[in-house]
Length: 184
Figure: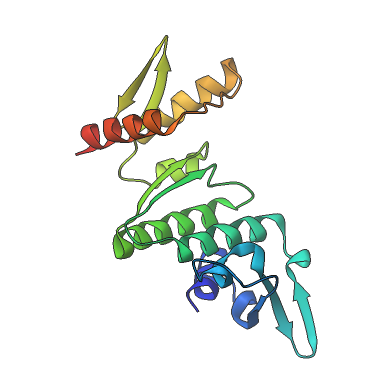
């Protein structure tokens, strides 16, 4: 399956080759896609007569499994937002995950926006967009050199706390249009 191949590829292992999917929960739904809901799906790795469930997976494996499951089940032409892509992943796995996401974006016409503090991810990208708040304005730096983005992250970490911004749909759409305008 695509999920198993992606897990093995990104984590550079064959550990997931015997992973099985177990459908649990109520499969009744109006839309007919209840079998694709993550809460109705469990995974286990078979080894002979033994099963190792998700409870035995590492935190990074669980985070990656959930992300890949969602990517596999998102509709083509979707916008996917991923916060802190690097969470609980080794830097080499971060790079392989980015390569996988770029391939999925191309194959399925997805727009994938990620936020990251990972210098490894930033250094490996050809196209970096830096959003930087200056006073009451967000400046967009398209085709930002990786060194500048890494420097901005380092300065912000040393001088300011993280900021969480919650926006309504209109503001999010406006931000996306601004990014696409600068990018396009």
